[in-house]
Structures are given as C-alpha cells and as structure tokens.
Image 1 (tube, rainbow, N blue to C red):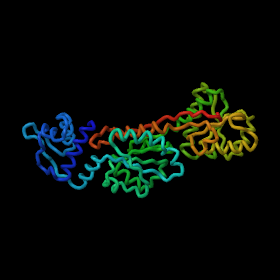
Image 2: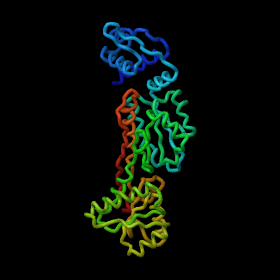
Image 3: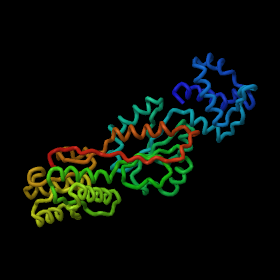
Image 4: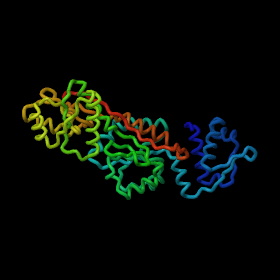
Length: 351
C-alpha cells in the first residue's frame, strides 16, 4: 500500500475496532468513501482489499462490503498496533553502546523512518515490557544488543511472543542468524579483510594481530577475516601472527621480531594502550611502526589512529528500510533477513 492507501486503511480499522462499524455492518460504496475521505476510488479500493486480506471485511459484487468478524480484545490490540506510527527502540546498558547507537546511526535511521511516516521513540531497556509499550502505540521494536548474555531466558520468551514486531541492530558481537528476527549487523569478518587489504596494499607482509586474549567471538571473527584477507591479497603466501597479552608483552614480541611488523589491534582501545606503552619506549606510531584498530572510537580520536569504521549512517538507513518493508503484519514473505553492512577504512597517521 502507498501512504494514502495506508491512511485510509488505518481510518477504517479504527472505525471497526471502536464499533462504529459493527459486525455485519455494510461499508459505504467505494465511490462514496472516496468522496468522504478526499481520495481516489482506486486508493479506497486497495485499502478495502487490505481489510479483506486481514479477514475484517467480506466483499461481494452484488451484496457490497460488510464487516465479517467481531474484534475481540487481543485482535483489537494487534490492529491498533498496526495502525500506530511509532517505532520504539530499546537500547542496552553496555558501556560500549555509544560506539554503535550514536548520532551517525540515528541520522540514517530517523529520517528514513520519518519519510515513511514513522516516529522513533527511544526507551531504556529495563523490564522489556513490550505488552505495555504495544498498548501505548508501539507498532514495532528495535533492539540494540551486543550478545546473547543481554537476553536471559525470561527476556527471550517476551521477544518470541512479539517476534513479528522485533527488529535487531547488533554490533557483530554475536551470531544472530539463528534467531527469527530481521537483523542488521556490522560485518566483523569483513573488517578483518579490510585491515589486510589496507596493510598489504601499503607493502606490509609481516602483520601481527594483537589482543589481550582471544576468547570473544568478535575478536576471533576479525582475526579470521585478517587471516583470509592476507591469504587472498598475497596469493596464499602470508599469514598474520597472533600476539596475545598486555602492551608490554606486545612490545617484547615486536622487538624480538625485529620491529618490522605492522600491528592490527583487536579494537581502538587496545591500539591506544599499545601506542601509549610504545611511546614510553621512544617509539612513535606512524613513524617507527604502524598500527591499525577497529571501531573508530571517539574516545581515542586524539591518537590519529587509522581504524576500520562501521558505516553507521548506512546501517541506520538499512535498518529503517528493513522495518518499512516488513512492518505490515499481513505480509508473510516466508523469510527472515540478516543483513551485514561492510565497514570502511579511515586512514589517519598510524598506518
């Protein structure tokens, strides 16, 4: 439906839900509805057909169109949700939430939703009371999550009850492909590939992946991308080394290897700690060695750190389009979308 047809549909749904059009009541002819609503007969026709698909009305060429079913409270709640124009976003309490749910992301998300007539309502995640929020007019929910740990079993049960209304934005820290929700994610594997392409393109063949440890899925995913990216860009000749430990250990391995490795830190925070430690030994990033991080963390912008940055604005746009395309509950596409958005290299001083 286009915007006019959806507006007509919403108005007729309200009349049915509120009882102004009761069971078996006949709807006015399409020509009369068009005149009353200031719309074309074709737009009215499509809106009425949507009511018919939802089972709310029955149409017969001779008998006309009439309300075909009663509207119990549960159906009334769902129908009101369908006619609402509010998208409620539930964030997370992670200290790293600002890395992804930021102004650039919102500058892609909000205008795209607004063009389709939707309002974004951002809420804290406490309680995850979707039932109450739906009654208050939330037509769909955006969840910003980083890992399965943020969704204990009791919250998962709530999500499954509203699975047709839930859209996920996550930073690539967990694999959401097994969940029945439309999801937009950062391409963590692709970030590792980008790091390899950037450094190999600058002539580096000795590269070390540096991390305090390697337990996290996102850390291993970036390493795998770096490994396969180096293999692809060096015709399977080169592979990254893996240096784990605090900055002092990284420095010791760098010195023992002859100081020729380019360093890929598992994120910008790790890169900044390495830069600080190396500086204390008289080594300057970008001059005496080269280092690259991930996330484009604003906290470390003063380091002039070359980084792999998520395209937050594009992620916001993709998520908005995913919502707009799938928010109509009467549409069953038979598939769930899982979109990974590629990041980009932001070249600064250090690599």
